[in-house]
Length: 352
Image (cartoon, rainbow, N blue to C red; front, side, top):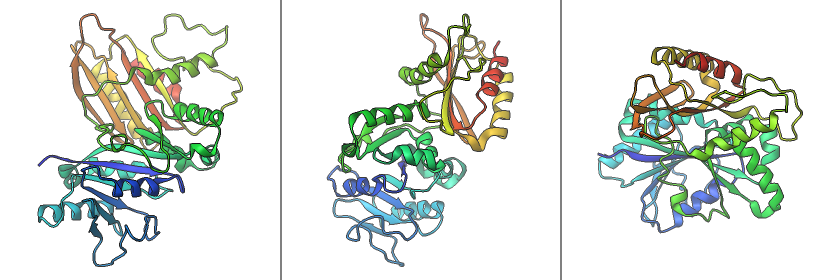
């Protein structure tokens, strides 16, 4: 049986997750969707959609969707869903997990890689984060949970853009991109968005043979260039400018969750890199939200794909390097107060 694609829908309190879920449940999109809602007793979905029945947690909607409230552990809920599907009681081909507005998506995502039964039936497709354009700047300033939700995102849906002007939206987009340069940002109006913008994004496969978006590095590189003065000397560097200490004042907000990039045209020594990455995960794993890269390894004619979340890390063999292709490693790390200089210097020591 094919693995069931699962989407984690997250976002801070009032961002618009419920509106989006309602839209998906009512739309005739041809999918049969199970929704796991973990607000734990809060009525976050309209009463006519969500039936609060202590004996029956799952109901089938008129359009073939299924709605399920989680009153216990996520693993139990997912296991129950698959059991009912195997027994012929339910028929669904997608799952959406709506997290509470104060949730850290990390443990939810890890469930798909640490529990054998869940991993045998489900595939984590993507983390989709809804961000309220009206309140996001203050929310990001005051709540680490909101920053983590942005940091984990494969896709960001920007809601309530009609309540702020274009300049404010642009500033917010820049901030979100600094925090997570790998997540695409799409505006959503009262939950009105194509289902293809939410499902089947294929954004979160730890060992998927994926190429990095060449544009995802631009935000980091632009920020580094802005930080440098005319006294900076970076000629010959293959990596970002982490070795130089900057003390300039910046107008943008300083977020605990941030991203940085490592690049090098020199190949990695496999043994050294394995040891170093293992050490990073042991020490900084809880603060490493997402990390991903394409690696150039010594003596290898194929790319190595590297991805992870917190302490769970995976690698896979990618496509062959093309003869006239620029061969270089590109890695992005998104996390909370990560010591960028330690990461960059350590990775440089792993190069051949």
